[in-house]
Amino acid sequence: QVELVESGGGSVQAGGSLRLSCAASGRGFSYTAMGWYRQAPGNQRELVADITSGNTITYVDSVKGRFTISGDNARNTVYLEMDSLKPEDTAVYYCWVQGTTVDAHVERWGEGTLVTVSS
Image 1 (cartoon, rainbow, N blue to C red):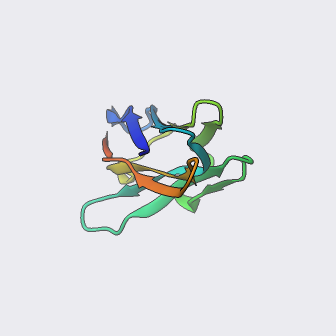
Image 2: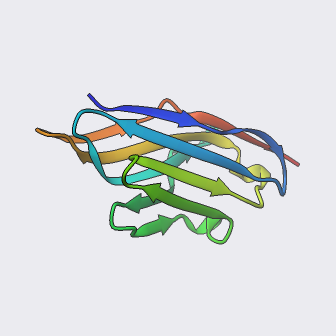
Image 3: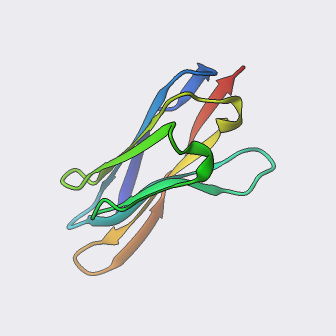
């Protein structure tokens, strides 16, 4: 069983910053990739950024230069530093993890954390 614990999020004015974190735990679990997706009302869920255990990083174009993703392999934790936030960044942000336990490949989603950016 792999569990995700998300933290961070909240409300901020445009131009501000927020930091999201997501920790995965489970017996013998190691992540191969972790990341963040977001879903705004009326929109499909989209990838924001992800990182592999080998530190290969992907960003959606709209956040490049403003968001920074980082990972801690030892703690199975991923961080998303969000700077220069814009109202269009408002969404529910979901942590996503892919990895292995002692006997299985695992993929999990977090429950989501709301980020609200006001103009």
